[in-house]
Length: 81
Image (cartoon, rainbow, N blue to C red):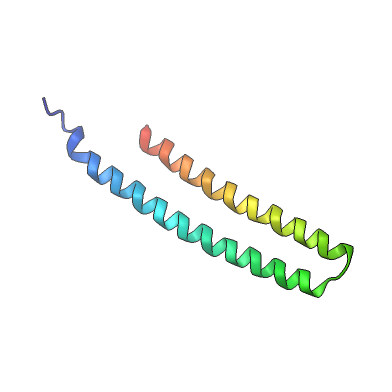
């Protein structure tokens, strides 16, 4: 009852696992860049502009997270079809 698809299943799982690991590392690096950039920009500002820089940093961190999740979901959808 082997139709040949079972032979390709471990390869598919390892490629998705590798993609997940690399995407996690990329996301972590992007968070570091956004966080340090926001800290430098926030340290240079004071008062209300510092709050705006904080909000922009949080927004950028959420954008990084959502972009990387979207990339993972798109890759999963390509693998499924």
